Image (cartoon, rainbow, N blue to C red):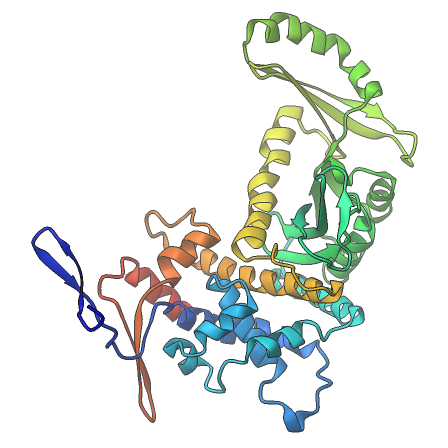
Length: 435
């Protein structure tokens, strides 16, 4: 049996196998990602910010080559540096990276080699990249701000207990373009900080960079209740920003909507009937706020109880329903789903290094992988192929990138033969030609 090619029988058919196929890879999507990297120069520009202090007499791989390899693997679904051991013989990867693939230990040393000062420079690179990517006739931008938890399972620096999430964790903060989903700035924070910690500092850096290029640009900030605080309201007043964000409920706000709440509860909630209405704007100022703000309230009977939400905005002449439904709640798709893709599909939740700076660098690598896949998604949406318009990062990877390819290397040419049964071959070809 050890030498037999028979695996099992399916009815009357014998199922057999062998391992004689030559130079075949299951990750043909490496080709598309590699070409996209070359066109956008995203890895090249990112790597130029870093300082290589190694003795080049003993260096086999440049910083750019190693970062390129790591981001390629993340984009293709390989989340750990250990995966390098399994992919060093991949024929597509070998053909695209003629210098070879570095070892897991070399990659780990890379991730642990940077100081916080260099990560600050990388943060400014992210902001500059976003500002330069905007068209010259841009009139307004929406900046979505949100954070997410990254549970820790070891002795990582910055791993602290968060009472709301009730776990030891690191805190990831993201600034996302609310129209395109582009990452403006990723930030890693210690695990015990509140949502709005240092938010005003990062926002100031982003806004100042935007206003340097676009002096008259309308900038709109959208966030949940965790970012409502005195520092934020002082900043938007000083920099003349528009905003719409949630506000945490308290006894004073509940008293404002008491009569409306009781009426809806009496007429709808007690009969398990859904109903929703809005109240506002009304002026409100918490004790710590520098000035009053216009607040709105959504009072809703869900059919299973009452739900009251408050949100603040300085938009003029906007009806509460349209402001909440058509603008504020859109942050779910524009930002929250994008953060889920970075976290769960590009593996920013795999921050398992000991050093805080190494995990910060890993977060940025995950965002680079996401950016490559986001650009591919933009191309997909312009081509209007059926069933592809709402693809997530995981769908792009599964249906478009994971394709069998056979590689034939010649002296002056490399030829890739993809499976004839590949369902998205036309889409793959069109995107490859566009990149």
